[in-house]
Image 1 (tube, one colour):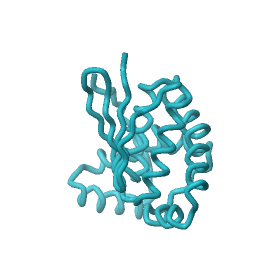
Image 2 (cartoon, rainbow, N blue to C red):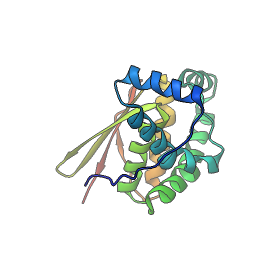
Image 3 (cartoon, rainbow, N blue to C red):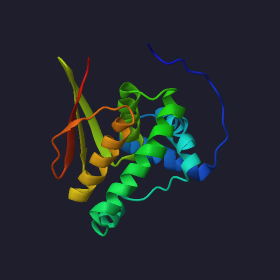
Image 4 (spheres, one colour):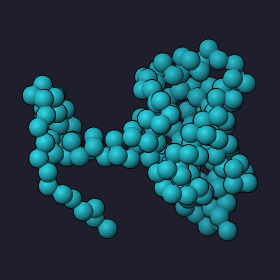
Length: 174
């Protein structure tokens, strides 16, 4: 079902408008489309994540932090992210905490944090999810632990097939 739109008028800084025009041209979209994407990013992700003092850092910086951390520290951070931030984000954004909303939360995160790509394949008996990233082996460790922690809350154990650039896992469906 198509989303309803509204017409509104805003005043914005001239320099900000020039930046929007430049980026819209680079992306081959209208300024209206770009502004709508930016507002959706705020509405669907940034405003919720403000509650967690979200910091935006380059993926390469996060990868360097992971590389300098012990496996146990990475697992601990991922568990904390899954148990608190991931669960609360999912409930705030989607209204409930289930396998379906966890996967929707992963899709949303992929679209807004730009740290990984999310894809899923539905098949008889389950779904296979692939999360690809450029964070190296320790990034795989973090993401795997994060995913495992999120589903553990529901007593679901994904079957993992991790590698250095992706976390691939299968969830059984009834």
